[in-house]
Image (cartoon, rainbow, N blue to C red; front, side, top):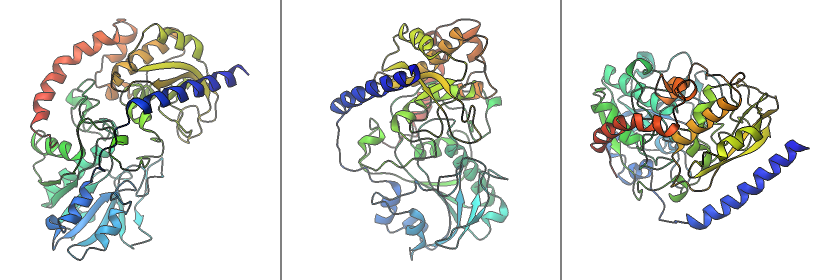
Length: 409
């Protein structure tokens, strides 16, 4: 009964905060025009006469909701020859490694870049002139789609192909830059392809330019920019419909929390995968949600409050599937005040202070936070999250100078 009461309290508090948030953030600009629509307006100029390989998934949509697979397949200006799928597959529903196959609608081969290989092979690229990338990112270094893009750009360089990025909004805005920049020995995998901050504040097109020039991929790159996008926009201010970018990225608030509390999934925590609001709830079977929430209340972390909750995650292949977990619900009441990375450090430190015997770091925490010393600083050195973020500040300042060169908006 106590668990049910906690869950109801969460929903009541959440409902009031959502109403207040909606009233204070009701900006309704003209619809942002994604790169695929701009490409159509330009009559496929950068693809004309070329054989195309398209790297996309279910998020590659025009503003009218038409798949760019169908748009390019039906275009007379170019020939769509092959499809390439990232993590979660071409339809965005798989939560495991994905095999290659055939697209039922077009009959085109679908080459998986999240199975036996994460980089297009010479065989996959045979007969192509250009690779086109169009996938909705969510603005966090360890979300794997940007790693897929970088690997494909490397392959394009190696095999003499052009590379075109159809730009899309950064789901969590293009202004805030947060977190640590990882050392190069942590980089190279899909969750940390290059040393950039956890929350990078760039669109995929801007990142492609950064990767290509600053990190010296050196492929023949073209970015087709958006129209009507402002760096201050969160996704709900673009006028575009929300499509879950992956099976467990179901809400904008989950995306906002992902670069901060989301890194807690690389500790002994479930983030409520399989439920309606993953990455908004965090817990484990042996934790005391009331105790953790009380610890977090004393911290007064701006923009977010944590309330006790209990939940049972259902997603396969993840921690504590079908086990009752106790922990906290992260409720955003002011996303402009919120520093997600700092909030995540507070949550992890509070979990450890309340349960030093039962709460542990897993292998990926240093990669996702970007600093091999983060866990030690939080638990043994007992540094405050603010002190840790201050330690990272010179890195961010230097990155912002580099980043400025590649911004398109």
